Length: 396
Image 1 (cartoon, rainbow, N blue to C red):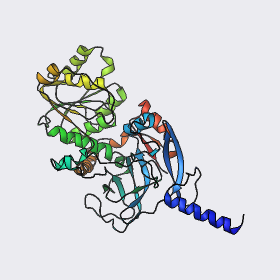
Image 2 (spheres, rainbow, N blue to C red):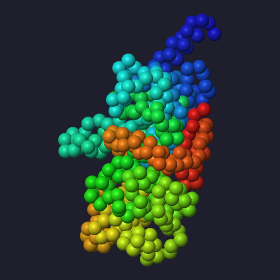
Image 3 (cartoon, rainbow, N blue to C red):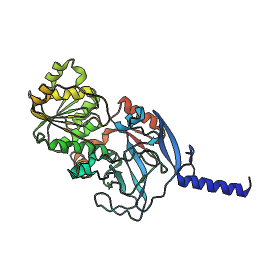
Image 4 (tube, rainbow, N blue to C red):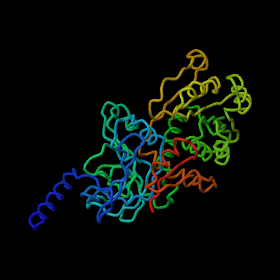
């Protein structure tokens, strides 16, 4: 091979790299980083791409870790969003290693510098049909997006399941140097919970002395119990089908627990809820599972004049059946839904995590399983088997 051929190959490779059309490398080379690319259902490939240089409005983050969300598991198993190929992961955190000259402050107005620990939030674009009516409903914008659920492009480092992630200009992000990694991995799901509680407050049915029922003790339900406890709510009933999770619910503030697998038939379950709530059913209930059957049941657990917040369905898991007469009209239940979060929910989330730690709630124990990036398939399968609570990918 003569020198001209070598030079031509170098030029071609450089052009392809700049265009983002180069084929992925499965072996590390200098200046490259790994991503876990979901290339087919239930199939990740560890691919290597050139580490991108941030533009004037961008930030390059070295990923320290990322939690596995139920949404990741749904995409891994069924690709409901039609994103494949995609780099998943939106519950991540890491350190700033490079930043553009225009980046000076985070979304809360705090200064940002090299070495800071950050988390990202939803990328919000204005949707006049929503925001002209209520600026507090920006989370309902049809044009919002989130890292870890972005279509693959020439950058490739678009999700937290990788060595690096490139934060684009205009993105929302927050500096959180005062939280350890395990707590930082809980920021995003905790923000989901904080938003749900804020929604619940709008009903006027959630008060410090309310009898509250939480159905579903996965990461969201357990974090919700912790939030309620830090609010001073002491009457919390946790409902789930796993004793381990119910035990954890008590550690985080639940005063009563009900294992649904121990009751056969609706009447037996209703008696259990009535007993756990002091004979009056719940003043307010949160439905945190993605089960249509569970959604249909939770209405029965709420007293007449009570309230209900549904936050378990972030993907379409099917239709639920309720009885409008007995479940809504006769009871005059006030119902709200909850969808992701707003930027202001993040400020409350940081305060909650610090307060929960201060009063001794063992939040870090929610992160039960940690896997390296190379074992991401097993991490997703662990999540689908529901053998842990919060499964995480941790980079060395």
